[in-house]
Length: 366
Image (cartoon, rainbow, N blue to C red):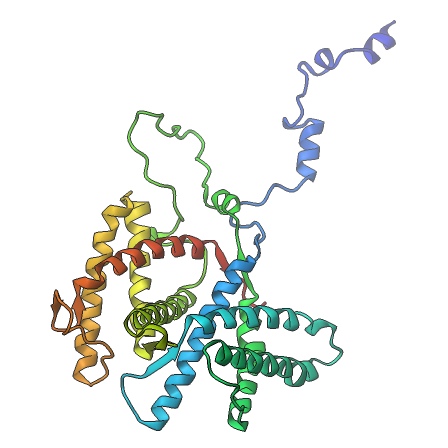
């Protein structure tokens, strides 16, 4: 029958051609139109979890050493003004700071359960901070062979101020850091090829340069802001010098060494030097494709020039805290080839640090 023929006519006969899902005018296209398009890489919500425990311990230990250096330098300068601005700490203190601040982080995270934020900020958390830091200080004295020391009112007041700093400034911002896993970072940094572009060269073709962070002049397009990277490198400079001078003193004095020393000027020296070396790393590795052992000589030359320049400037005003005149292979007592292995090690280690910092993000407050 005519009616049945019309009703039973196949889609191909009725429409001239079968409409494929997703083609204009088909049901697939209607569904696609009602479904939002996937977000682009730039529009995707920020991913990443809290910093791993090992990384938080690393940061806490380094930050604790920085506070030790600042406090000891201020006390020393108050007793006898010295433009070298020497400060002191030790690997033992670094370990205790890492553990105590990791525990205090757990206390801080209970703030939401406290009915009064004011009571928590100015009473509960400072009490836990002062008590734990006092116990850690006494434990450090006992581990070094000394007796239990008294805690004066000035020390308690200082610990209370540091507790306010930790809860209101440091932890408030530090816990906003997020860490991207390597797979997430590679997915975000992979840019899709434009339509019609040629496929990458096959094996045996021209050597590819390493894929790295996208951005101008080889710098990372994501990660910590430059100011936070500078602060990190400055604090890491304190960590490097405290550990180096401590073990150097142990080798020279035996069991008599209990601490290492550094200078407040080292914060600016290491912070600025490492900041520039990181830029060199991103440029030479990702833009030029240089290997590690091609980059290291450039790093070391820059480090020696930087140390010599700072040494000359600080020596003119009596603020230089080092003198290598008694070492062989020194120049003006400000640089020495005796430390060349150490600078090579730190240069390679910084490349690893830069790769880690590239995956760390700071989420600012809205």
